[in-house]
Image: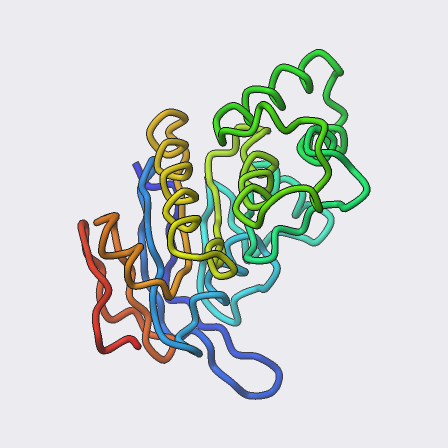
Length: 232
C-alpha cells in the first residue's frame, strides 16, 4: 500500500528556477528510501514539499491520504502530525534538557503528562540515550544531538519520517551510528523513512531503495540501490 503518491509534479520558484520537473513517484508504507543527486538536483525541494514547507507549482502530492498541495495553511498541522522531520542542524532548544526537548513535541499537541513520560522515555531508549535525559544539548556530541532530534521526531509515532541530510555534520563513524538507529526505527516501528543525502558510503552500505534525481528529474528508482556516479 502506498503512503506517498506524487503525480506530474513541477516546482518552479519565483526567481524562475525549476527545481522539480514532471516528477512521478510512489512510495509504499514501511519503505526506507534514499533520495540522492548532486547539488541542485531537487532533493531538498522534494523533502520540503512533502512536509508542505513548499507547494508544488503543478501536480498532486498525496501523503497518508492528504492532498498536500490543496491543504490550506491553517490545516497544515494535520499533515505535520502524521510525520516527523530531522534536519542536518539538529534544531534543539539549548535551554531545555534532552527529556524536555523530546517532550516539547508532545506538549504542543496537548498530550497528558503520563503519556508524555512513557513515550519520551521509549523514544530515548530507541535512540540509545535513556541515560542522558537530564543533559543539555551543549553537553552532548553532534551524534548524540542528532539522536535527540530523531527521538523528538518519532515520539508521536509518525507514519513518516523525513530526514534532510541528517548525517551532513557528522564524521563517518557517527553517521553510521545514526543510520543504525534509523534502520531499527524503520524495522521495529514500521515507520516509512525518506532520507535526502549526498553520502555515497551510507547509500552503498545500506542497500535500501534509492531515488535518483538529476536537474529536477527522476532518472532512476532502484529497490536495493547504490549511489550512481553520474549524480555527483
